[in-house]
Image (cartoon, rainbow over the protein chains, first blue to last red):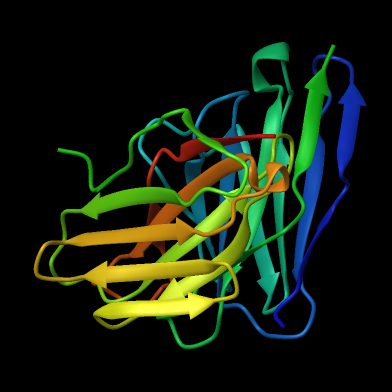
Length: 116
Length: 113
């Protein structure tokens, strides 16, 4: 089955640090990947759609200069949280859709980000 | 009106009972429907996909789709404490071919021993 690998699984760092999270599709190509954020006991919130070879599409209210997305290849998308602050602490999850466009999304294991 | 609606719960059922989870969606053009299970602190895990009207069974899980009523449900038979989780309903966006899904807010299921 389709596998999505996300690293790191957990990050703890000081305020002001920039943090990069990687999302890889291991056995299929993904021209599109999705980045979500989830606060405790809340629902998934789509942050942005990562597009291979072009700019990401951000959801309303998400700062594109704060959350930098790069999708340089058909198997890798990265999310960089720039100058992270405690309010950025959250669970970040990436996903890639099954090839074909009608299938499910396959999720990475998520990254728990804690900013001190 | 939200695009995908679920009762947030919690839905509490005794062990061995049938748990029934419901979801409605607003876009009649949607063609793909999914149920994900999410344990606390973990990422969502796909448990069922359904694309045509009717029932689809996989082990203890049955997904039911009624496009006329814009309604999709998940039945869990012989519920186990390990089924306690949040269940997310997801529906595809008909426009474009990006694979983007719209998620409901999730229903928390508690199965009591």
